[in-house]
Image (cartoon, rainbow, N blue to C red):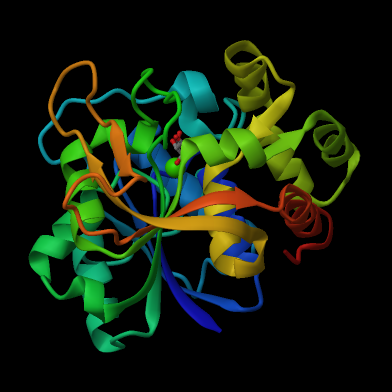
Length: 313
Ligand code: BDR
Ligand code: CA
């Protein structure tokens, strides 16, 4: 199968993305690396282990703990989005599964070096670990196969501030390094709002289903559904990280994409974390980021349903 490292600040949608990666026959997860972001770090570590355990792969997938803070900036957790602890405010796992020895940054570099060009990286949290891995191994871009990043708000309002999406906002310095130095497929917040929501009908269907994955999903997304009603005015649950993982798992999901120069405003202030996308080629920046502009929403919904109801995305 396709070998994959998942770098995550495991809360709601991260846990579903991990589940999708773990359940997909065609993906072998080499390592899960945890980064500071959504909720308190130790919750994130446990949440990731819980999701892997639920999928039955906790024995074979090592979880490495990484950066507990962004490179330079102060940041805030978003328990108000995902619920206290990150899994809807109801589930606080205590798996007893030990973390792997060693640091997440070393794990990313080591796995990439062991199999040049064969391992891909899915980044579904702030980019601190990945930026540090680039500084540790300047050839990282060549050593990796594909890199998928969930982050940024392309020509649209952000979710954390009006100008920034959460992952880019938390560690804009790291996001800048990653977008400048890796060849990334970018799944941004705007795409999620357009095509990456699970609607009320599906949410209700999953709530009634008695499979362990559907029950997990319902527990985890209840809070996010309420938040989405308030913030976006729609009865749905946004699934940015699951969408990013789905784009990696099933490239046919992507119906439109463009390759542009993308940069990040790392300065403190109103535009901290803003993702600049040079769609018109106005700057001299090298167009190297493949921005996913549209996906087939019904295929995404079907993948999520197949995962939750049949354990097979
Ligand atoms: C991103 O921020 C987090 O809250 C989600 O897990 C996702 O990675 C969306 O902006
Ligand atoms: Ca995330």
